[in-house]
Amino acid sequence: MVCRLRLDKRAEYLELHSAVWPGVEAMITECGIRNFTIFVRGDVLFGYYEYVGDDFEADQARMAADPVSQQWWSRTDPCQFGFDDDAPDGARWQELDEVWHQD
Image 1 (cartoon, rainbow, N blue to C red):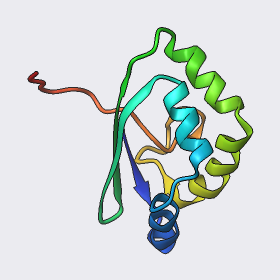
Image 2 (cartoon, one colour; image 1 turned 90 degrees about the vertical axis):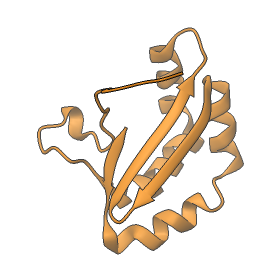
Image 3 (cartoon, rainbow, N blue to C red; image 1 turned 180 degrees about the vertical axis):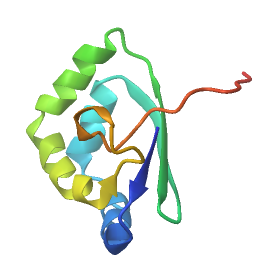
């Protein structure tokens, strides 16, 4: 997944991610997400994770309902914006189409 980083919020975003809140990390793990990594280059954020759960939609809904995650997103969301103006629901993070893969 990919999104853009507001350059005037870059330092704030990187500072937040230098010490992600334990409750956020716990919820990510509880919702079946492993190997979650976010990379940055200039104003581009690239995120990758592996999902090991059984019901992705339910786990995503559980995370969205979590008050700690909501508070975290209230801090990180203003730092980001999407590539496409027509993204559904104003989504900042947008999925990429896989072109090639090797295990």
